[in-house]
Length: 86
Image (cartoon, rainbow, N blue to C red):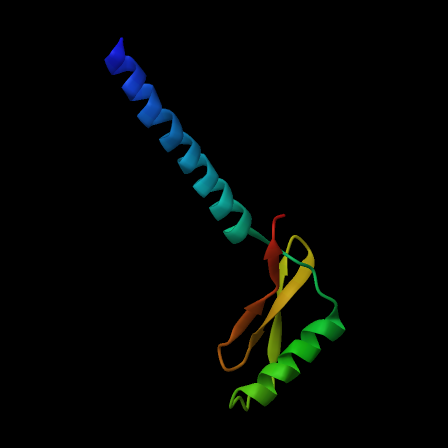
C-alpha cells in the first residue's frame, strides 16, 4: 500500500508538469499563415531590399489556400507572415 502511494505522489506531479510544458510549447510555437494584401507584400519586399544588400528586381507571391501569405525574392530570400494559433 505504501509503495502505491509513493508511486502516485511521484507520477501525478510528473504528468502535470509534462502537460503544462506541452501546453506552453504548443501555444508559443504553433503558428498559422496570416493573409496579406498585395500592397503589404510589396512594402515588405521593398523593406527587404533596403535592409539587405539585395539588388533583385523580381519577386513572387507565396500562396497558401488561395491567399497571399508572403513573397520570395529573386535573391532567394523568403518571407511568410505567420502568427501564433492563440
